[in-house]
Image: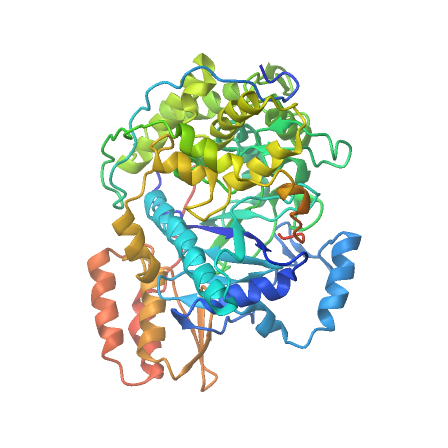
Length: 515
Length: 64
């Protein structure tokens, strides 16, 4: 298998609500929450050079789509008494992540990493960071329990917010090939990765209160698009690599649910990474294609444990058949998988087998099954009708991140949900960056020159002098080498010396695809 | 079960298979079984405290 290390990241927008007010302003609440978190390296994000309107298909759109309601909100946002940067309230964290107000939602983005389990640890650390910020915000309000934060993707009234995945790929891979290779897999993975939702929100069925596997499927309306807030796509075509665009492209996926289950978050990243690394980068193409991928993801979501046959070009398969097809393709190839990748592939196969035998056997790792089981117990005990609104409220509270209130946390605490991260390593990930890649170097530079750094992004750091340092990915560096580099950075006298120190690490992808 | 999306009772859950016990990068995952004690009454108590109208009041703005 190619030794190209796929750098990944995961960004999660959280729902936020004030419990002591009838109505609260989500812009203000998100800003204040982020600002309550004091342990940041830096407060200025370098937006210069970022362009979410660039499309990987080779053009730039004039405007990103918004629905009418959001357009009106945006117009009123312009009249507020704070600047764009004040509203964003960016925090660049010492762990290499980013915490900010993104479109009225507090968002935590993990530092970049090519290890699934490392990302899982940082994703969990992000949840802890939000809890710390919540505590601080409630202290300043003088109201314990004054805020609730939700790791989900919907308000059940047609407003969705995302949990995005990022996979850095060689630029040499054409975007169209990524779409062809991945779409059947992305649709099918929903059956194992859904967070579960009590309600339907697609325009034709809004208000119909029944359970489905995915929170996000109702909001996926097209196959490929650069948009993220309206008419959302199965594959987002935003061309913003946050790395050298001559060598890299970033696959930005916005279709996934924000899982409470750590197993699902790990499998989401791991299965997708395996498809990209073990199949796409190896030149493999599927000989199946869904006739209507958008309709299919909704069918998978609504199918629950009775998965429907999906229409392919020349046959009909369930989501499980498609997942088996991809895992077979991986197993048939002579791939030199590392232990983490082997764990992912065997967990993937095992989940298909278990689902076919008895889906409820996966209730310790799949949110939508755990939630369904939990709601069933409650519905029976309280003799509720299938459309009782209480069930939807319980669905929401499953995602409450407060360990004393959230229903998922009660299940995890009792051992009914698998936990893969250790508390101590998560605690360390709150403040410390990973040992490899770009994040520890970025952190070291900001820490070495705190008075000189004005703004930083994933790839660039801007200094008071106007100088901008562009960071390579340090993809091929081992941890010891990064440690030595950090030590050298610690001994520098001025920011001008940084460029010389990192020059040897400037790299291409060295990726060549066999045909 | 679930033909119309309604939630019905699942059978008793089976034993959980292995999971990676250590999350150290590239380490071989070590099988670990969670110590399961059914959340039972405590979960039910927590659920009963949830305001039935909580989701009706919950409104967010569109995100990405």
